Length: 212
Ligand SMILES: N[C@@H](CCC(=O)N[C@@H](CS)C(=O)NCC(=O)O)C(=O)O
Image (tube, rainbow, N blue to C red):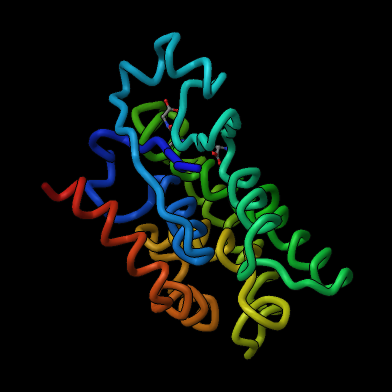
């Protein structure tokens, strides 16, 4: 069955791979699934045809036969559940890898998004100057805790998993702020993720569209 995802017609990051279709492309590449991409404009994302697939008018979405999914966590989980390569088979190890998926999206990503909102969405507000250091410190606190847990390990819990895929994807968003480089083991962890051939293919595919 053909898999179709949606992505920005033109990503605001110009192809740095920070738009969330990249993590879905990466999961598709890790699991060896071919896929098509339907590109949508910001305007089209808010129109009824797209809102049928994504109630919040965002990308990415995932369609396969009659199945329509949104939310990158759910899409990556769906792929990991149904194809080898992203979740351990053994029950406890699998549960721990899923825990890291949730940690990436519900503990690490929120303060990172807060910084983006503070800088780009509300950068002209009078409180921004005072707010930014607080938000940056909230990211530092979480990255410090993650750094302590990762230590010298290659991946978060044994072999590379969907937990690492989402964590690396989320951490990549801190790179422009410079905060990632304050934690050398996390910066190296992200670089290991980026070096994976599946990531390289995913990155190149989105770059080809956005750099064109
Ligand atoms: N929690 C959602 C977030 C999706 C999201 O924020 N997508 C962004 C692109 S990376 C988007 O569509 N932004 C445009 C908008 O919200 O209007 C997920 O993980 O899929």
